[in-house]
Length: 206
View 1 (cartoon, rainbow, N blue to C red):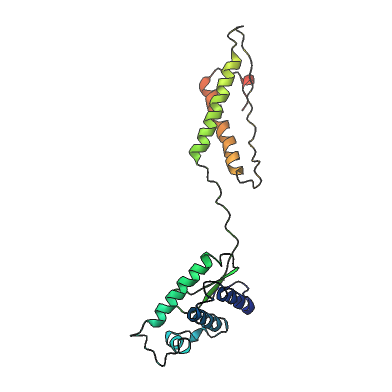
View 2 (view 1 turned 30 degrees about the horizontal axis):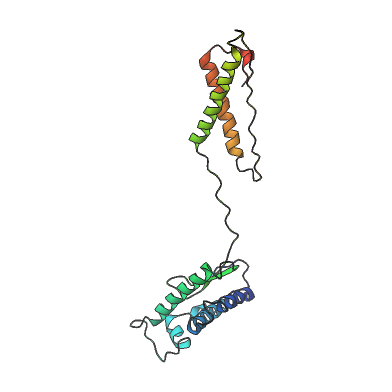
């Protein structure tokens, strides 16, 4: 049985919740089998949970040969499916779940953890590069527009400064992306500056 600070009282409370459910309340045979398995497993007598003893003590068989009779295995299999139905519907919010692992009659009572948080957004490098490239092209277009006025023929001066992008989300899940975008944009603008060759140093800041 796996448990984290699991007490006998909490295990029995989990059992009572299951037995009082719609899935079990009108099913005396599965309820008796589940109670027997859980009580044996939580009282330090899990070694007694054998196919032969279950047949005699739960199903009142006068004798039982597991080599030729699969009755107990079939009934425990049905019990597993009944538990699965319960925990997928009525017992979905139970803090403890009772399981009977396949190949064993010893119960596993596990503590249900908190719901898993939604997956963190995974931003592809290509997406970051595309965003940086778009910003860079926009910046260059603005620079060209500011450098030359077609009406007056005069040249303007534009200083481009790349400031760090900031993640303003409550959980700060995009900080890595923001830092990466800042670096990518700086690199691309610097590359454009080097390729153009005619950017005065005081016109372009990276």
